[in-house]
Amino acid sequence: GLGLLIEQMVRDSDPIIRYGACLATASAYVATGNNAGIRRLLHVAVSDVSDDVRRAAVMSLGFVLCSTPSQCPRVVKLLAESYNPHVRYGAAMAVGISCSGTGMKEAVALLEPMLTDAVDFVQQGALIAMAMVMVEQSEQSLAPFRKRLMNHIQDDREVTMTKMGAIMAQGIIDAGGRNVTIGLRAKSGYPRMTAVLSMLVFTQYWYWYPLSYFISLTFVPTAFIGLDSQLKMPMCSVTSHCKPSLFAYPAPVNLDDKKDKGKLVKAVLSTTAKAKAKAAKKAREEGKEAEGMDVD
Image (cartoon, rainbow, N blue to C red; front, side, top):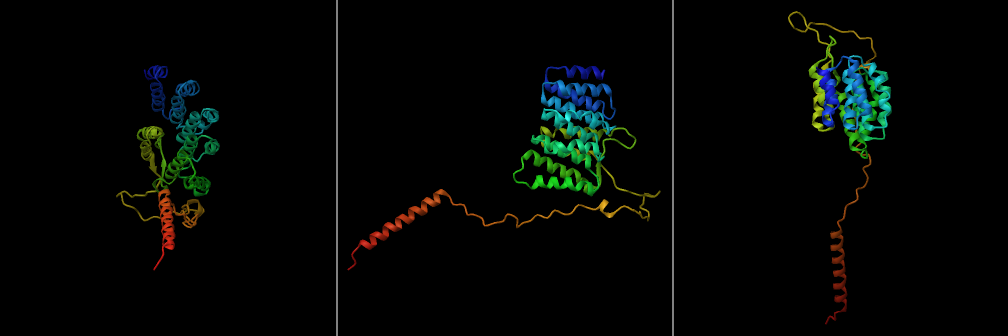
């Protein structure tokens, strides 16, 4: 059966086949919390010799556990502290996938240390995963993370991998005008296969960044829509006793154009300087000759 095929793939000598076995486990046991699948992925995550395979194994845990988000941070907690940066990246993405849109405190606590990781691609994964967890959360709770993202994006000295992660994270938390969330499961509890497969393809942006656009297929609207029996919008009103700040939009970004705008030093080419020096020398020589001439 399927389990036997995946087991054969896991034991293959080709790391690409073993990588495929991890993704097959993720898609076959998505949202099931299958113990056999979890054990297989954990075994591969700590024993495989290929960093790519180990990263895929840890990341796949997020798909298997997406029906019980509270379990994922506990399962990958030790992996998030691994010496191997690929395993740490996989742990961050697993939490982002499993706990997407929940704002879960345990997930945020696990991801926060990785935001300042010494390895740039681990920071990238942590930024993206944090955005996936915090999507559709109140602006009050998002404000510190939004500030961190802007610091990464505006810092000219920031490494490319981290800056790319910050830009992608900014797009995720503002997706759909902040009116959508990531929905891997339907209200019935069953996985939305289009969303699951799109998320699976999105994780492969590691190899080809245009695949990151597939995350847009995982979004579901969170708007309140009321229709009557004629499918027309009835006249109605909604009373909310929440503070306006709970639904407030983030403040617009104001770029200071005058910042660091000093006097620009004009660049002078070495050939231009040599030409000017040569012309000045020639002018001085001509001046000396003119002074030495006798005028009648």
